[in-house]
Image 1 (tube, rainbow, N blue to C red):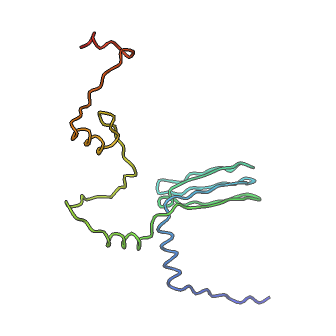
Image 2 (cartoon, rainbow, N blue to C red; image 1 turned 90 degrees about the vertical axis):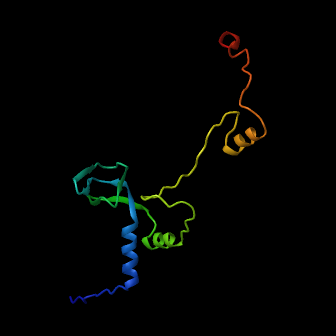
Image 3 (tube, rainbow, N blue to C red; image 1 turned 60 degrees about the vertical axis):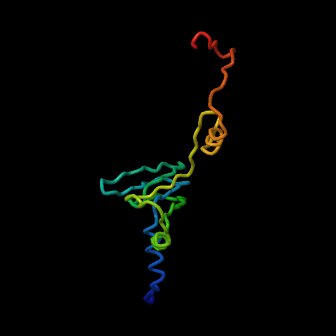
Length: 157
């Protein structure tokens, strides 16, 4: 039999796109649905970790893709699903950084974080700064009468 040699030529865009994808991977989720046995080896700078695969055992393995790689060596029939949690592509990060306009004080050095929510409890039944400020600006105070059913205030005051 004669075999023709196949030469695959990738366009530069395809190689760049794949490289960007590899650089964006942060978490790898490997769901081992069914296996007749085998081993999953996680490789890192500090050493390898072997996870024995027992027959018919569902296993979800999550690891940092940017710090580890893996080798999956199943025995017999097996089914596995792999997925990644990705970070933004570096081009998108650079574009967003170039579009940022900072007015006000100089931005502190270091990595930025996003605060997703913030809540507080203010005196006078205020649940946010605006309602607390409105209560103060209207001449109110935060004193309330404690019901006698709770405790007798005359003993203490």
